[in-house]
Length: 392
Image (cartoon, rainbow, N blue to C red):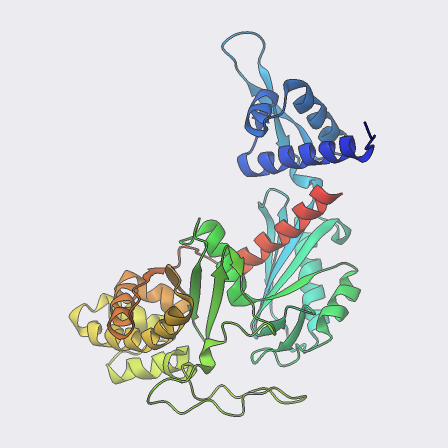
C-alpha cells in the first residue's frame, strides 16, 4: 500500500478543529462528551485535548459528577488565548470593543474624533484606548473589523466612498493595516448589523433574508444562502438610490476625487430620518429625532396611525422592489426608525407590500439591541480569529 505520511497529521488537525469548534459553541465539556459529539474514540479525544492543552487553547475548568466512579474533568477554551477588536465608526464618534475568543466583551470605549479628519489617527486612538482599558496588548489581537457607512469594494477591501465619512477613501485599508501592523477588515455597517441579526437576533437559522436599516440614511443588507451578498463592487443594498414613483430621480450619483455623490432623490428622499421627521411634523408630531417622532406616534394610538401608515407605504416601495427580485423569506426592519416603529410598523409594511406585489414576506423588527453594528463587527472579527487558530 502506498504510504501517505500527511494523512495522520491531517486527521489530527481535523480532530483538533472539531473539538475546539465544539467547545467554542457549547462551552465546557467532558472528554466523554467531546468524544460522543464528535464521533472520536476516548483515546483519540484524550490525545486531541492533550494537544490543545499543549497549545494553550484549552484547560480543565471544573468537574462533572458522574453516577459511578470519579468525577470527570470539564474542559473549556481559555478565554485569553486570543482577543479581537470590533469598531463602529460614524461621523460624530467611534466605538471600539475588545472581546476574548469566547466572544465576551472585556472592554468598550467611545470617543469623539475631536476634529481629527485622519481616519488612521481616529482608529488608532480608539483601538489603543480600548486595549488599554482591557489590559490587552495590541499585539494579541487576532482579528480587527471596522464597520463604517459607505461602499466597501469586496475585491480590495477598501472604501470606495462614504457620504458620512468623506476622508475615508481608497488607500485607507492599507494605511490602517500598516499603522496597526496587522490584517484588518473594513465592512459596511448595515452588513455587520445583518451578521449580528443572523447570529443573535430575529434571523437566526434563516438563510435568505434582507435587513432594511432606516436611520439617518437608508441601507439594505442582503443575505443569500447564509452568506452576505455584496455585489461585484460592494454596492448591493444601496437602496437609497432606488427610483420610486412621485419622487425625482437621484442624479449625479457617481463619486469622483474630492466630491461625494448626491443623496437627493430616490427612496432616500422618502424615508431617511430627515424625511420621516418632516413627515411627522405634518401629522402634528415633533421630537428631537425621527425615532422620537415615531415613538410618539406609536404611543398616540389612533392619532398616530396615519403617520405609521404613511411611513409603511413609503417603506413598502423599497421592500416590494427587493422582494420581486430576491424573494427573501424574511425582512428585518432595523435602525432608529425601524426599532421605534416596532410591531405596529412591521405589520403595516407587510400588508402594504402584499398589496403591491405578489409576494408577502414576513416583516419583523430587529431583535439585536444596543449597538448592532458593533456587535456584528466583533462577531466578524471572532470568525477571523477562530479561523486563524483552526488553521495554525
